[in-house]
Length: 160
Length: 69
Image (cartoon, rainbow over all chains, first blue to last red; front, side, top):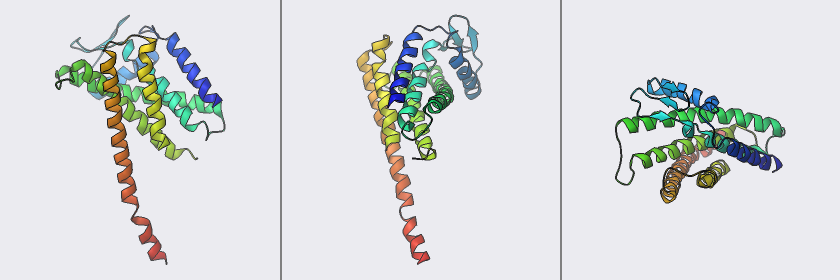
């Protein structure tokens, strides 16, 4: 319980500290995500200082708000909440959760960006689900599915 | 079951609490509808997949027991 409280407090503190972070401060998350998105979508992105990454049509941007920072904190807190009762070394759990959450964030976010870009380029919308709402819905579906999948896979591997 | 609800609760609290930290691009009511709707969809899919997995495994063990006895 103490480890979970410490992790939540740390995540909230870091989130507040990085609330107005620019593209340069979030490169540790944005760069690997864009690299993986380039592989998945076969689309080269161009970096623009102070803005983010632009696709060749220059109509789709990967900006600091797309970094997946919130999801990274969500994944760390979820892992600690789920496994803190089962793991002896709590500091190792937090460190392993951060590393795993980083990998999961990059993978989920690259997948989300690839799907969102395809939807954006083909001008897809369904009635109430306008392009911006569809963009948000894709984000929730991809992020939450990946998070649940990852925690369920880990749940079977970590002994009770 | 805990592996499903723990990440879902953490995700919902964080996602619906985001407007407390910084303003959203979308209207808050739209944000709530999208988050809750998609969460329900993901949970329903996961539970259906879980039930199917259990359904496939259940008939196997009695047959193995019969053969051994």
